[in-house]
Length: 464
Image (cartoon, rainbow, N blue to C red; front, side, top):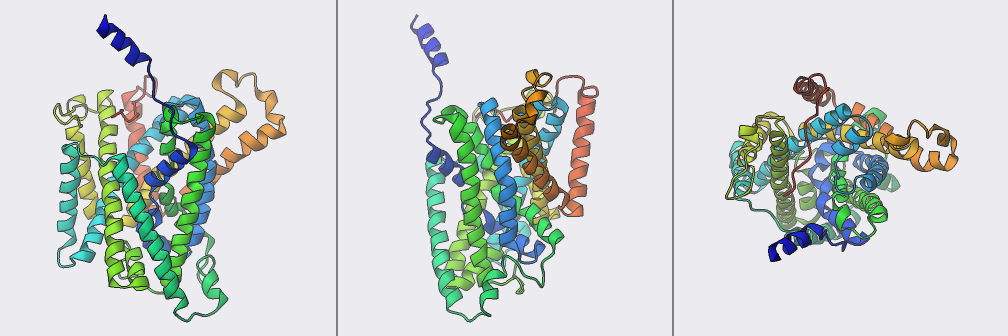
């Protein structure tokens, strides 16, 4: 009787709704990281010809409208929190499958670009050690720690975010001293990071913006906290939007100051770790070391988490027989981690670290992310403007209501078309590589489901 009562109680008890709006925003900022634009600063400067601030702000507009769509879809699916689920349920399972396949590419690429960046940063400390050695080292560390089931706690993540905040504050102070302690060519010096008539080109800036989206990757994770948030119907939407605003303006300020310290006309010693050299110029060798270590730790944490996330995604696919279950659907009994998948993702990341650049990897990651964002915007448009599936056949007369149009119709369409514009402005090699990945996924899905007539692959990431 006691056991039965205990079982009944445990089944009826849900998660406590203790997370306030500010808790959700803090979570979002920690997930995205306050140093988000620093790792990609050099690539953005090179691709956008110095208009890094402009690309960050344009990307923020796209992400704000997409954040609204994510927040709204979290109301409809409070426990799912997945672009794959939103698109599959509201549009079509086959379209949801395509969205899920694009997410799979993101999961695989994230640990790859983290290995690349960490290896480049480590070379700043020990330039005599070849890049290949560092790449293998980080592959082994990421894989080894994940195989042991070692993960950073929420408390440690918060402490790391606070430490990053201190480093950012020091950067602003030392950069301001450097900027005002050196001569410049008047007002144009301060406006050039936004608009430089000598180098501005709309297509180039949009190309840079397509990479700048990487700064905001992770904001959608807030939607997974719906069951633990106070007033989730209101706060998930607000927190998602406000997180994008906070990250957007903080990122814009960081790169603006960086461009004043190191103008775009001056080449970087290393494009991938450009921000570290900016910090060194602003405050000297000691801050070069501090910033290098800070960003190395940030990318180290991201790389470990991304590898485990990718392994869990593959486990979900293996568990549902989308991939060979005997390999991908296996969990280590002792450590409770998908051992084979962790090793597989690590090997793929290592191979990628030897074959692609950080910038190209970032563009390919955004190729998949922008597809997912477009899907979520379209799903939000259909559900909240056209109406839920069961009402669409009778709800067309409501589409002429002005309030409905401006509140539920226009925002997701703006988000969709801005994301589409950025996706179209990715570099041709990234589009070709991403297109090959998507084509392979579509062909695989069609084969697996008999032309999409049977149940599709489960791309949901299994709960820990």
